[in-house]
Amino acid sequence: MNKKLSLKNAGTFLVFGGPSIFAFAAVVIIPFIVGLYLTFTNWDVRTGDSSLIGFTNYLEVFRDKVFLQQLWFTLKYVFFTVVIANVFAFFIALALTRGGRGEQWLRTGFFTPNLVGGIVLGYLWQTLFSQVLPYLGAKYGWELFQTSWLTNTGTAFWALIIATAWQLVGYLMIIYIAGFTGVPNDVLEAANIDGAGRTSVIRRIILPLTVPAIVICIFISLSRSFLTYDINLALTKGGPFNSTELATYHIVQKAFLSNQYGVGQAEAVVLFAVVAIIALTQSYLLKKLEVES
Amino acid sequence: MNANRRILPGLRTGFLYLLLFAFLTPFLLIIMNSFKTTQQFFESPLSLPTTINFKNYASAFDNMDFMQGFMNSLIITGISVTIIIIFSAMTGYLFVRYKWKVNSIFFFLMLASMALPFQVLMIPMVMLYGNMGLLNTKLTLLFMYLGFGVPFGVFTFHGFIKGIPYELEESAFIEGSTTLRTFFSIVLPLLKPVFVTLLVLDVLWIWNDYLLPSLVLLSPDQKTLPLSTYTFFSSYSVDYAPLMAGLIMTIIPVLIIYLFLQKQIIKGITEGALK
Image 1 (cartoon, each protein chain N blue to C red):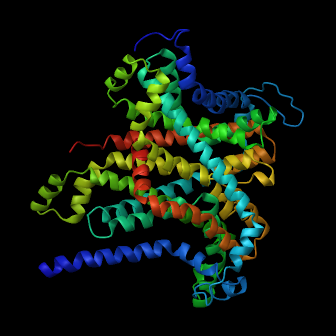
Image 2: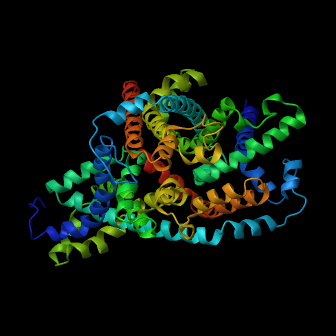
Image 3: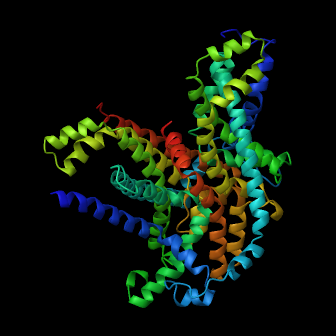
């Protein structure tokens, strides 16, 4: 099996690897390289002119106050989404790993928002926020709901977080459940016999033993919320007055509507770097807390 | 004590069902109101519908070109998922059984690419394929889904195939079977558990994807369901009753599959996430 690749077995390579490697290279590798090159040019879609301009695009990214504002907005959005979705998912999962009756159904139910794509999900919440909640506000005189949440910058921000977290909770719950099932029963029993209370069992045993699941969940929720696009498009369309444009939304607008491909691509690269740094730091820090049972 | 033991879990389950009910209220509200007129919805969005009529559904069905969107989504999802699974299984097998240098280079590249967000690739991709005049056909979209789906597919199959003893294939080779035949008649049937995982994850991804089709498919007759939903909402933005019926209709196909396959779906998600 350790024969070298030669003309004789090149056929095997082409048949088994050809289609997937070709598609992978054409869709991922080449665009990635071209994309990096693109950030150093002032490529113009209409004329097709392009010349190397060094780091000008990157400088422009950092000089673009709007993008920086939106990046900051994205960071805040990601932070709250990740915290809220993970806390809810953790406790729902905890309640659903005791082998009680109906657990399967409850899990199935909490997972359903994940079947729905971002566009449909965004419009669903848009209908609720713009029609149903103001109706409640008017009927019962609740000030919080008097006007649609989507017409005010601060509340539109929370609307976006609620809709995203709602979808993420079920997905993260499934991973947490898998993590909890890995906690050995004898450890839990020993704690019970020693008279440990529910909170200290969670804090001292369940939390440290499920660090791998927590790392994965935070990683998934981080990368998913950093790249949110369709929920943003359907729920707020970046409004009111472009105040709720998340980074991805901004990049799509920049590249495909204002035809600034080079700057847009530089922004995408900066966004990618931010996501990578945050995701790697969190898994490094959390991994340090990992223990063996 | 004994009574406590019986009552407490009951209370907890009851509370959890209540929580689930609150959690799913958004769906329930949309379903309820999809049977009312827009006027009734504005006046009392919380009341139960007095009649069950499907007028809104009929109107949404026509106005969002539901059938066309549905067929496009079905074709694109069906073909992409099939080719992703078959080709990643073959490549996974190649990478496990043949330790050539090219193989390990491509395997490494595929692993690394999984950390790469689509947003970094989309601009150059649209630019390149646009320049070559390849946008606006389903074929290009299928090819792109294959390219994006292959890394995770290969990775998952690779992990599974490593655990299959080589002896099974060896005896086939001794009897003169070709690599291709051995793969399809001996290895492929063993990969069933991985099929299910990939099938679930890829179907949910491609069926619900909006950004990529919105960049590639430009003409109205190519639209997938998420794209038709978007257009429908942009053009009907005040007539809420048919809009809600449209939302429910786009959710129903996945919901039906989910109700039949929920165990496999939950298992697929678990395995996909922990890999």
